[in-house]
Length: 197
Image 1 (cartoon, rainbow, N blue to C red):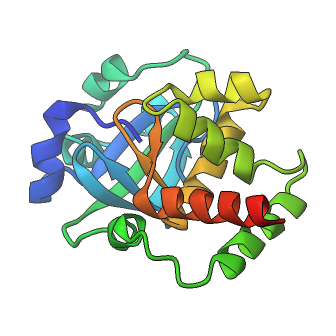
Image 2 (cartoon, rainbow, N blue to C red):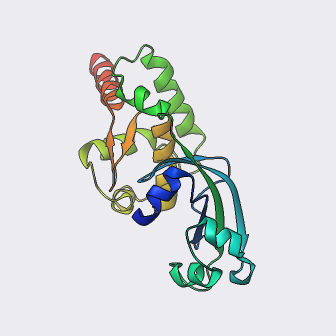
């Protein structure tokens, strides 16, 4: 989730507890935690509202003086829904960072089986290995460009990469992604197993 740099300090201090977004498609989920430029934030509440439902209290909690300032600052098409996100800054370290940095995979078969299950249950068919390979081959490349090369929907591609990230296999960058040490170790183990067959 992209957050304007001028909001980072307020989010970290707890002064900014609300974000407003105008999105054609919802890009956050209530209850999820997101890594942002400001750090990790939890989205505790997500509401859809109209411009005239923005209160002065929520505008100020988002760092604005008035609801009109919020509306004037919103990006996106005027007909797109407005979302209010009640957020909370998480100062503790992301446990996925330690997982991603650990290149000792104790049970390659179990992790490979988990990826196979993810492939089997996806409506568009297998995707995990292709996604890992393209990120390995093209680090720091925009997600829409990677999705286009694979013939996948960009929004769905990003959701799938997030699943790999939750397993500690990828790392998000300012633009695009890279394979984590854990992901490199997994691909090497799978290559070795395939070469042995």
